[in-house]
Figure 1: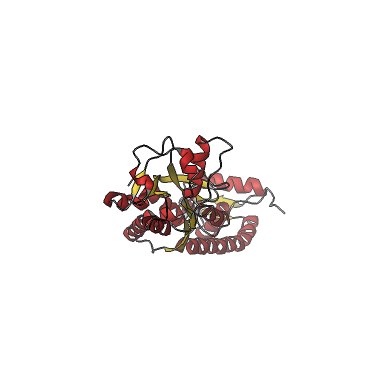
Figure 2: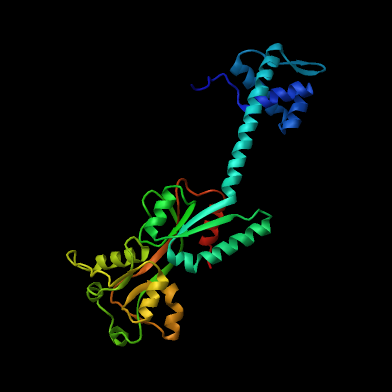
Length: 310
């Protein structure tokens, strides 16, 4: 049952107890950090709500009326319960802020998160804040969204083409997917870009269904090919960027991977990038969370660090 409109707020009850302790409206105001005008206004509000005088003013100060003293006695129990509630909430927030579970897609976890987590630790040490225990789970983007939506992770990082349904998101970077092959592959010696239809019809070494990388590639091809076009099934389905990179290096076929993952291989010639005509494979990397406009505690701090320009 809701409280009636005659119940004063906690701050007004604190004022009554302060008047009882100090015997003065002015002293009670100084104790609570209130001006004389604010004290008088609160007293008038209490008396209007309850309907009887609460404070008797005299030449030697102010004291509670008989009714005021009775309300003050009741208020002590209410304020004690409120303090207990406040302490419990603080303990819950402290427990929440002492741990952070992060769910991340592979590309972000391997190439970006280590730097962000190191910056978070340095920031906490500089502010004197106790270090947060980070639990990191690496999954495909679809699973990351499920974990964040289910409350099993406080923040997630995904690399799919769209914001997962039900989550709030903020961009934390971007990368480019590139088609790569081993130097001995027939595409490595092409003089002209590959056509999207040829790429779509070729079995690739690919991530599993649900990965952000695979969804970006499929969406990009669907945007430029006829509606009836079908994509070839992967020649190999592997669960990590490192295993796909290794398979391509071993000559297992072509793959589409983040430029973050193959930058060194392209620079040294271990892998060759194959151009694809008219296909945009740039993608936005996002931090995601459930609930309001921004998460709280260390999840908010990590997202802020991730969104800073490198």
